[in-house]
Amino acid sequence: MIDTPSPNGPPPDTRVVTEIFPGIRTLEGAGFLVHRPFPTQRLAMLDPFLLLDEMVPSDLAPGEAKGAPDHPHRGFETVTYMLEGRLEHADSVGNRGSLGPGDVQWMTAGAGVVHSEMPSAGMTREGGRMHGFQLWVNLPAKSKMIAPRYQEIPADEIPVVSLDGGGSVRVIAGVFRDTTGAVETHSPVTYLHVTLSPGEATNLAVGESDNAGVYVFAGPGFLGSDARPVDAHELALLGPGSMVSATAGQDGLECLVLSGAPLGEPVTRYGPFVMNTRAEIAQAVEDYQSGRMGVIG
Ligand code: MN
Image (tube, rainbow, N blue to C red; front, side):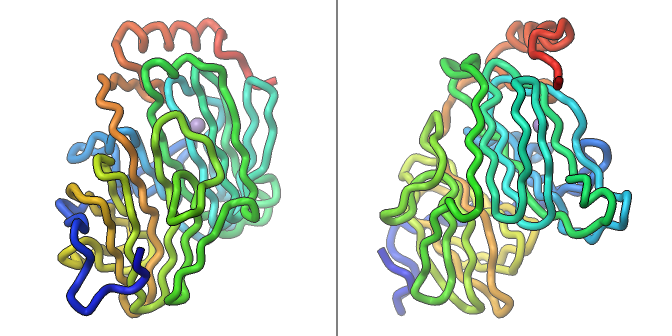
């Protein structure tokens, strides 16, 4: 594999950018701002990915930090990746934890958990900068009702691959070159945080039949076989092929590369529940309302 583009352009079989979706500014939880490239009216999902939120990097005054108080999930996984600030979580299974810069929490909600995702007491008191991502990964039908599970990966346990041009790739899930990511997934999923120096170019292999997209959060960058410009807070959807190419502009590039084998199963979603049928959604609502997903103790 190649770290720099050949003089003749990107390698053969490089994916083209088929469409660009802006991250829609949306209020989430108790009222914090996110950029959400999907789900939106234009892009319902990127099978197997159901949602991507970028918690907007902002300088919060004391008392201003907001989170997502107690709420349930069933039928999928929530993946929280923090870059700045600190979140604390608690759940109905008895887990407690704290996520700081570079840490990843890969939560398999499975049959159901009730949890809270809140700024740390220190952040609430003193304010500060909060920046991070939440990705929702669907579970295959056969795994939707498995037991909840957490994979907590501290920043220093996420493999980092250095690129020849000075950039780096943090391998959260999947495989990049010979490096395997930190988490186990229920279907083939790749989640990379790619950082490129000004002007640097790189090529990444992705599964031939994967759905793939690149979310830029510091740019602009130039993506795909025709080097389409993509700005910060935009998601570039990629067409078929086995390679993704990315080139940084003069300010460098930071992006998330998401690719995964589409599950190709029916998706019925209702807020925090994502199942295959409406009957399963009705059951989830009933189980939550009757306390069968537990409460945070
Ligand atoms: Mn949640």
